[in-house]
Image 1: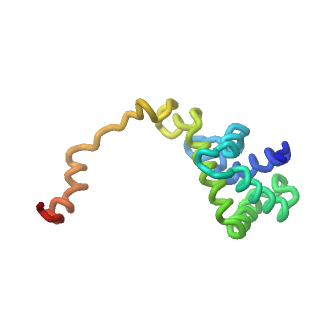
Image 2 (image 1 turned 90 degrees about the horizontal axis):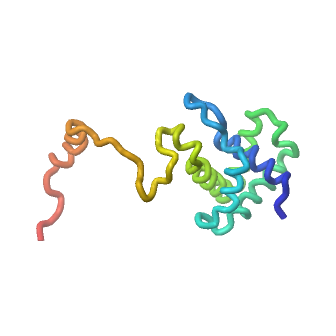
Image 3 (image 1 turned 30 degrees about the vertical axis):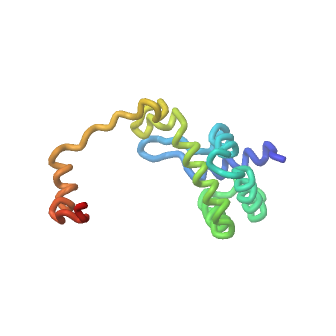
Length: 149
């Protein structure tokens, strides 16, 4: 059964997976909306709650008060949990990235629109002709690399 304590611990772990800060003043991932998205990501994971629960239990077994640990100790503990439970931990990280970077308030901080990618997409500026020539020069110099039929 999922509890408020599980929510709190998950959000503290998410804070370490994607911490706040940087030049763009990005918020951390440890917010309720990201946690809920991770737990409900059944389109991307067979059982996200199971993977998250494995990580939470491993964290709790190593540190009763994860939130009370200094940041370097929390990171070290998560590295140990990752080593002991790589598949569930990687699943948590993957789902966290997906949930966090799809949030409409995060995308503008990265220089992309707050609107969904589809159906309109994002405006992408075209590369210059010189850059395209530089990038494709080795391929053109190689010549034909297939059989004519």
